[in-house]
Length: 507
Image (cartoon, rainbow, N blue to C red; front, side):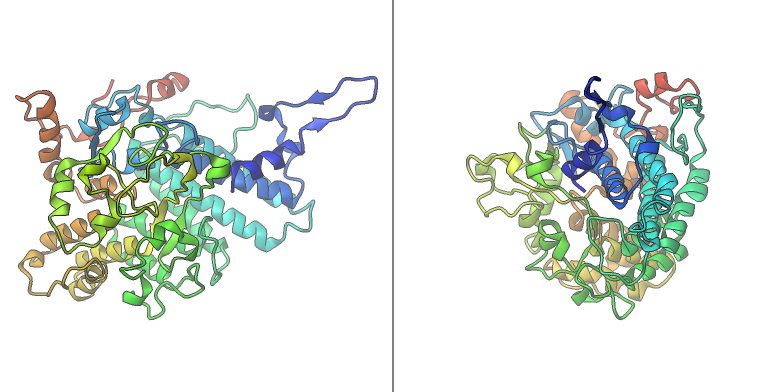
């Protein structure tokens, strides 16, 4: 999964020796014919590593840049969780104020399409490699293809949530005669014909009841993505089906995620071991799929919400800091954010690091820290399950699911008679609040706000506060133009494809 594995495997096929009278010929990396590749299991493994490296780079970063990957910009940069720090960059300044331009690097979708093209190459060629090398067994082919289809679905899921209608490629780009400029496909069609179709194919191929490598897409991860997509569609009955499929899959500890069929406290990390899901997901009962990182090979995991080579451009929103710190019962506060003003780092998220209570040690080198960003974990699934149950009328089980994470965090269990959950709508508010605290810094908050139609309700007060710091007379909030829930398409992407039309309300 690391860049080193990929580079060694690819470089091994590059050097071609001529006769002693001819010069040594080395093919550039970008010009290795696909026909010279996918000849062995080693090639297949390297190609699979390549798709994960591409996705890893898009989410966490390239190991060098201080901008970092897009996991937090896309999933939380526009939410109430984060604001500009005093060292802010243009990316977060525009996101935090809902003023995204078509030159903002977070509006660039090319990294997702790079990943998709690598996946398309694998889908086409891995079955062909099995005809050449007997070590590429049917089980390997099926499991690799399942990962490919699921990761392609995840890429398109990001694309549709961020840009709406998108260009669809399901075949690899192998020849300059192929049309590279295609029009956008309506988002609903992408969800039904590509995302859900790919996930259905992936689930049919993946080997069931296996103890997974948590850094690869596995049976549970496919179910979690599928449930997430159905939640986005507000198709709660189907979301429940896929949450239940997840619960009967095996986790990394070799136990089923929910052996009884319905999650209980023992299916989650304990309060004392809560951070195990982030520090060591490969041993965590909660982990479903996390992104791998090895700082000795991949460099700095420079996520913009915490530790970077330079000052981080994003800080925890001050309103959130004050409000969450006031919840003295919530044990997650001290494990998630730096709450010590005397450290000068009250802005940082610490949940991904094993740090002392005093915060960042003096002289800490950012490159020495690994970050394993969770794509999905059980607490996320349990709270999503609670939402779906609430919307389908099973308030009793929904409340039981909510109380699993709530009680673990140190609160008392909510009673069914509590006024805060008297209606379906207010119960949803309580679940979303619990998701905010439990999943803080996990790339979920903005998508939750959009998915539940709460952009103005939640974001207006925060954006008003931020805008007034720039212009005291401002009182716009997010505004009434809900076209701006989507991102603009990057200007360079528009110029590269003349068939594209910019999203409404952007130029």
